[in-house]
Amino acid sequence: MRLKGMKKKIVLGVAGSSGAMYAKILFDRLAQIKDQWDAVGIVMSENAILNWELEVGTPDFSIYPFDFYKKNDFNAPFASGSAKYDTMIICPCSMGMLARVATGISNDLMTRAADVVLKERRRLILVTRETPLSLIHINNMKTVTEAGGIICPATPSFYSNPTTMEEVAATVTDRVLDLAGFDISSYRWGAVGGL
Image (cartoon, rainbow, N blue to C red; front, side, top):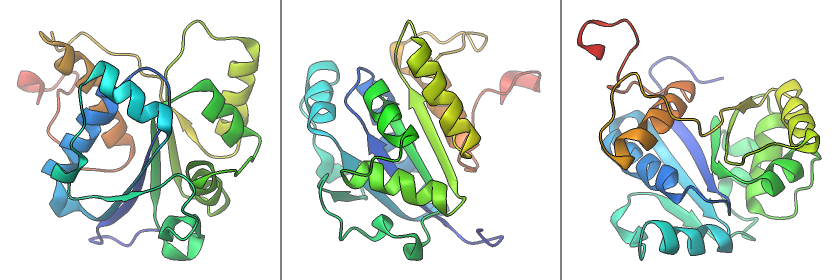
């Protein structure tokens, strides 16, 4: 458990489903709140990079102050619970990734990190991106929830009257950062002025 005043250590996995914009907005927001974390480790699947290129454009990951790891780099610190990474977000999370996490298949760094976070009773947030859902998907979500994970579907809200695609996507990513325990400025339901 994180002591009050300590900065977070976070793993951000980017799986291969559509929704690279969500990941990019999370990268941008985390870069803006650098004072709230000590380490951000990034692991991406090959399909995540392809989707990023298709949906967002050619990536320049060098602009981000994060540590990037190859998907099979089991020497990454968050491959072990002893490194004390307190939160993992997988965004977007494909149904295949959800299935591997739900069944404990740790066949790459992303699934190993999710397995570690669950076994250490730390925070795992899966930003699932699929529609419609089969019973298999729903049962996998139930399994992860029972194991202590949080399923946060990439379902935007509209009560803040977003006007751009980025603002719509940020209604999801801001919620994810809230769930991860970050202090962010975001639209708040019922608050004066929304912030």
